[in-house]
Length: 315
Image 1 (cartoon, rainbow, N blue to C red):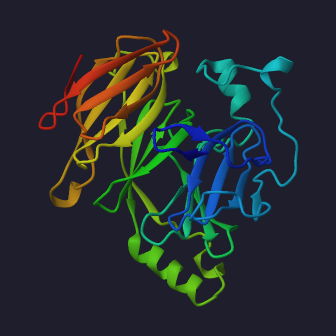
Image 2: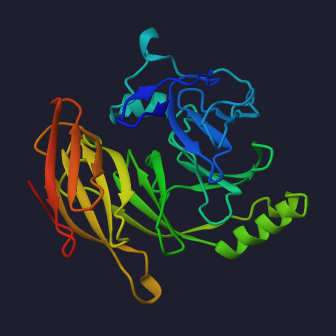
C-alpha cells in the first residue's frame, strides 16, 4: 500500500507469500527486498521491491524450507489439531513436532545475517542473507533460545538494542526473555567475505550470539502454563525492555543495565495489569511517553503514561 497525504491507503501490489499463516514481514535496510515468514510450514520467502515506490518488481527470489519439502506432522486446527495460542501439555506435544518460524530480523550492522526464532523447535536459526541477490543462501548455525531446561521455550520475536551489541528474544512458552551478546566482529568478517564473493563454508557452526541471561516475564507464583508472551520491544531510549503477557494480562517492564560487564542485561521493574484480556500487541507514541496496549479478547485498547525515569506505567 502507498500512503496518501491524509493517511489514506492505496493498494499498489500483491504477491503469494508461498506458505501458510504468514506472520511476519521484514524490509531490508536498502529497501530492495521484502522478507516474509510463514508460521505454519516455517518457510521463508524473499521478494524484490522498488526502493522508490515500494512496488513488487519481480518474482520471488528465494524460498527456504527447513522441512526440505516434507509435510507438516501435526494436524491443522480445522482438521482436529490444537489451538497454537494455548500452553497446555497436549498443545505443546503437538505444536513442537514441527518447526514454526515466527519472525525474521536482519542484523542492523551489515544486513548479512537473518535471525529466525523457531517457536516449534526452541531454536534461533542464523542464516547468511545474500542482500545483493535477495537470497537466503545458507543456514550457518542454530542455537537454543533459552536455558535448555527440558521444557519448551517457544521463541517468538527477536530485537536488537539500539546502542549495545545485545539482542533480546522473547520466549512465548516459557515466559522468559533471553539476552544474547552479539559478536559484531564475526558479523563484520562475514560481511567482508560476502563482499569479496568468498564461500560461507568457514562460518558454518560459528554463532554470532552468546546467551548471557534468562529472566522471567511473570511473577514466580504464577503458573507458566497459564501464560504465553506476546510482543517484545526496546524503548527508544534504550533504557527499558517491554514484554506483553497473555494470561497474566500484564506488561512486564525491565531496566537495561548500562555499565560494566553486565551492560545490556535486565532487571525487573514490575508487572502492570493491562486493564483487559490477552494483550497481543502494544505500541509507544512518537514521544515514547505513552504506551498503547491492544487487548485482543476483551476487544479494548488501554493507554498508559510511561515514566521515562522509572519505567513504570500508569493507567
